[in-house]
Length: 399
Image (cartoon, rainbow, N blue to C red; front, side, top):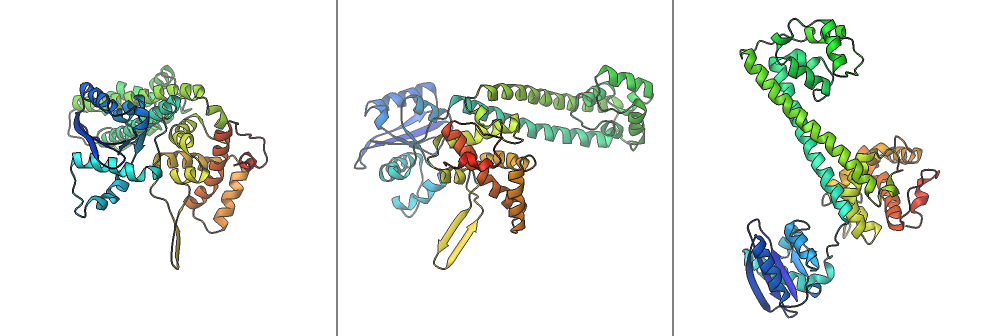
């Protein structure tokens, strides 16, 4: 039997087909605990879960997790691939939710041998993935909040934006809370600024006199907003920046602990210049692909480090791979670019690629495939990267 599950935010549609494509059951499911539980019970009346694969246009989410927990083989289908197959059920490409559930089940019935079954990812890997993605979201929010604070200070309090190097640093936050508008710092002296910096652990190695010069040399604002309103604006935005920065600091601590507890982290920890956060990103984004990949070629394609080759008649092109896991590619590219600054082997391969006329992104992907083969060998053989090897590629000879 084959199951098609057309999922939605508030409701779902499910269709069950037999081996001949005849409809055995079709029903709607409310997105509630009662609705999902009833759907799983209804499916169990047709056959045991292990022999009823479910085709769905998703690789993650509550419904996928519940199906996996109930023992159903989940076969995810990319929406673009499913859309391309619609003409087989009619040239008009008509669409409705019950019809899509039927088409998903029928697509699974005829093409099951070509569709991969979802392999559950290790919980430790999923935890790192969730943590690093949340950190990336918070980092984007911090950048936006700091930019907003910079624009606010540039208009109403330019000196405060110029006195310290980073607007999200502890010393800048403390300064803006104490001196939220120009009038509040009008009588500030170098000695007072020295005491203020000492009290808040300033480590910028600039004297109070130097900092005061920065403050006074900034352009004078000509704001028509009253000082109490400026103070409220600056303090509110400063509190937002401080809050996001505190959450980032907390996430960094939790991520470091999760990396230390991951069973495969030690295999890649000695890669040159990888760092804890980048290691967490690679495990979280590339790890699920490593767990399910059956060949290095599949790994290289899904991470976007392998090009796309198209050959037709006399035409032959090799181009950039756009359809890929972009988070995984970005995690790898960040580390690969750093690795050439710490590994002579990687630096030599990068220089050679550049001398062949490859641009920087292309050269990075070229050495990236060599590094990815090493990661593949380490992960598959459960052996750590040996940084003592003169030629790191020896890790991957067996691959």
